[in-house]
Image 1 (tube, rainbow, N blue to C red):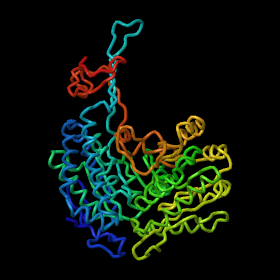
Image 2: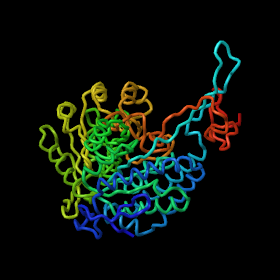
Image 3: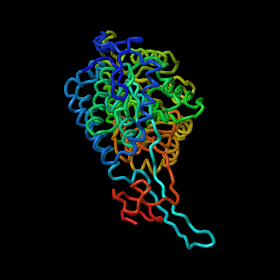
Length: 529
């Protein structure tokens, strides 16, 4: 099932350019099948094919696109055990995690099928004509969101199913009517190819244009640059590092026609421990904290990297509990060697900073040959944290820093100094929340998601979820990369003035054949007009 070929508009491209292989991170051995670096000619072919398929895809009925998404869910499941086995070989993620993530990818397909069938996501609005109005007659004006054109998707290393070839970016773009060109992640190219073939089968099964999807493999920066620079690319979705996302943003901004890059780039996801919570359950919070830090070997963009609490006995209890549970965490294999080496380098830097103490770590030593990482928890004071930029940079992996504060005003000052964050967590009692409401007001300006008595790890894809935040957590704080609102990245509003009813998009026609919710003369209704 895995050939190493690119999948371009329904055909396989078997080039021999700059071959590379995936590596099993748990054994450090190369996996079978070589993959080629996509050429500039193949980039051009894929995007020209996508642009050529755009009208056919966007003008296909909503029901056809919904059936495609449901067919894609079936095709993902039909890949069965071989998909899970290949993903595990390429990522070392445990099988229960992969099974759960596959379920998330399948459910996302079904969620967007239901969304586009219901229709109101397209922000349908009708203002009927008033020809008798004086002194100026009012024209008939109708508006909806329409797809923008070919979208380039860069998948994440840490979510091979849910944020990748069949992840939210790809699925919501196709749901909106945008063709997609995916750059496969070089750490799991075999998984990418298998999923790409599932997309191709679902397109064929539902009669949608095969050129609506392409998968290009590659590990070099040149491929990513070419995809973003191509004049037919209309938007980019990226999940990864700040360095990578910012590079793509700069390339897109330098184009003759600048385009948006919707980049989710991670954050330190601060946690604030308020007095009532520490007094009630410091040890339990410490246990839950380590569970969050070590989840997925710390390879989540929502990991709690910095914790603040008031200096005193209850904070010491929290740190002691965290250290005890960190010791029990057996070192585990990370996604690939590059991530593991960066983790080791980052925590090594923290260890050299004066006033920073290693408060707890895994008792067992990590196995370098198996690309393993140990949990490491550090402690320091707020003034050390504030004066060392290295301590406020994300280190991807199972590590975190606990900083002690003298006063709650110190916490507030630190919150005001934060860059944009994906999440911020507050542990407290209801009374704490009321008493320290100014902290919540500050965090509302800093983060995309606020969590009370929990941690940012574990995201529920649903209409109410916002996974984004002010820069540098994301490139644009208005948009989410998870949940149904993610579709809004790949559409734009278009108004129709004075059009005959039968020449309008069906969702704006008087009869409202899809029964979508519409704003008609400032009143929400599903009725025909």
